[in-house]
Length: 382
Figure 1 (cartoon, rainbow, N blue to C red):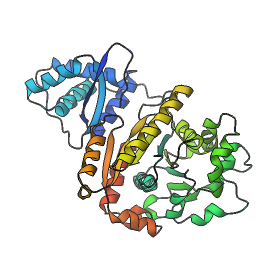
Figure 2: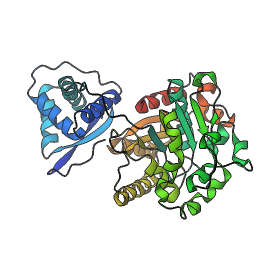
Figure 3: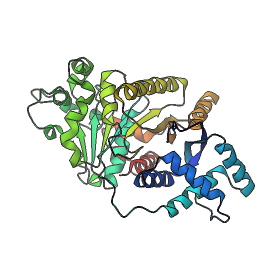
Figure 4: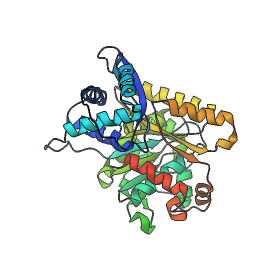
């Protein structure tokens, strides 16, 4: 999702875009030293002057928005109407033309840091642990090296993967000790591997520990506490392609450290690392996301950083629950920022896998839940 530019008055164009086109646009714009919204503006103007453009496959397109010069969104819609194409098809044609005209430079991209994603919502019970674990499993199944960090003091992720006993071991260093600088050993020693064959020894867990409930208090005594998680995890980053953090169901210093960790680093592609929020189709989730977004924006303003909001996942959705549920889903989907990455139904397989302390993709690999996780993993594929 691109953001407004200070260069003159701009208006938002909201339409839809396929994940593949969005990813290609993001990478190619970066390669050519351009902002995504500028690349989109140039693409649309070039499309106006091109008479015959082949139809583009737009299946799987999801809500997406960008900012164009004042009046440009209306002109784009007018030209789409004249050509008899939808806004989604018109944008897809324009961006495809631009990508064809702007191939990747022969000079390679600057090396990108490990992908870092926090699954967070300060409202509990919306499926943060389920989403974190499922996406990580799907990424590992696809061949990526993945680290899951149980950053929720409640430790549900650790317990649901069958490692609850590790949370209460005595005389063992913890993530908190590596964050406050009191640890003496190697943080690699805290990791455990999920040994299922489908993960190919590529999926590791950094378990929760019982001192995590005191993390906010402990962090208040740490110098530059926002960077405490980054300092702790830095020794692990070269070992993984992506790090998934199961966030805490609260705001405060604990959340600030996680948001700071997933900020966009110097030279990193936009919308590569960042924040994903599972939500329900209800008013409470709308309020919770507003509060989380306010904390993120405040951290970005004061720290002069950028944390990309990668999107929302509507979880446990069931249209039979009534009109208000359907209306809340529609409200989520009409928002271009953050956009909805997926809608996951209220299915039994996830609950059964959690209760049985078995990874979802091992328990029900052919289920709708498992396929939803694979689709989400493609959004984060590195």
